[in-house]
Amino acid sequence: MRAFDMLGLPREQICCVTMPCFGTTDRTYSNACTMTKRVGASLREINIRRSVTSHFEDIGQDLENHDVTYENGQARERTQILMDVANQVGGMVVGTGDMSELALGWATYNGDHMSMYGVNASVPKTLVRHLVRYYADTCGEKELADVLYDVLDTPVSPELLPPKDGEIAQKTEDLVGPYELHDFFLYYILRYGYAPSKIYRLALIAFEGQYEADVVYKWLRVFYRRFFSQQFKRSCLPDGPKVGSVAVSPRGDLRMPSDACSRLWLEELDRIHGQENKL
Image (cartoon, rainbow, N blue to C red):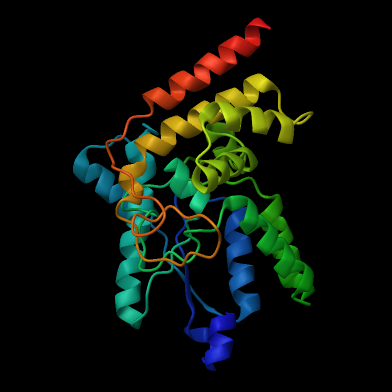
């Protein structure tokens, strides 16, 4: 929005697209519509339930089988639509993914993983939250601020599984762990190249009283496993800016083979955790 204002372009030329499907809740749908209206952008609603259902019928995917195909089919349909709409209006698809999701590979390959410009590619999830809160605090518009505060209070979710009693059933941090831990791990791995044992000990100090040692160990192990195994997604990222001290772009900070193995890092982490449990 600020970029459009600085260039003297009407905000109506920002084309926002909401694409409800099986997992969309009233809360997130309403927030998306209200936010778009308050900032003065244009809104298109394209319900993808019918097209995804047809696609699943074509490939023989049971709609009652809520596996990875069920989830990723929705994400890839959304990306296809966004790319085609961008062609229609002569625009570009601005990616919504952030650095935390890229580090964990928590994105559908060639789904939300892909865009024409990844504006948040070097912004960690914890910083995104601070930026949203800052804008809500300073925008001077109560209705928009209220929506942004509600977005912050909404559990992080891709909403690819059907809701339960109208509420989000798929909560990202329940599945991959707290983003404040993962962003902590990511910073010290990329910025300083610390070993697993040192990052583990630093995290115990930084999050003392908040997370038990076993919890830190569990999610650090998940981080290393996913960070290595999901490099193939980062190897083909769209362009994006580097706005902080670290990034995961294959054209910049992180030159890493997609077939790298995490075994040595996990073994070191297991050793230090095992030694501490014996004390």
